[in-house]
Length: 117
Image (cartoon, rainbow, N blue to C red):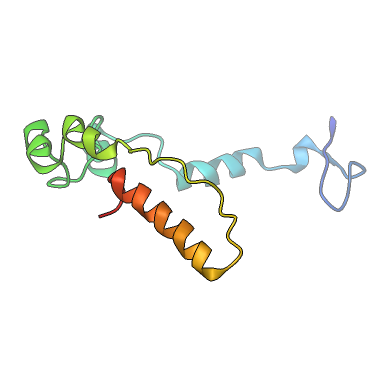
């Protein structure tokens, strides 16, 4: 009888059992009965998604439908282009009136650049 050493959590490798002590055929039978070995094409088509069919029916658009429904990149480009405002110097105000003047200068530069109405 050949002996096999295996690591068993909690027991380490000191646990020895013979290969004749394991019912290999019984284990195979249990595993094979739990999982079918194959499906017919009709069974597989019913059970799994068809190759190349990834969207639910009615959940996607054709290119023509999408072009009509969503803005094209060329229509978005001008909207995504940011304007630059003139540089506003750091405030050196020592009172509220000076801070208001600096803040109003910043607002004017933002409006001139088209970033504010």
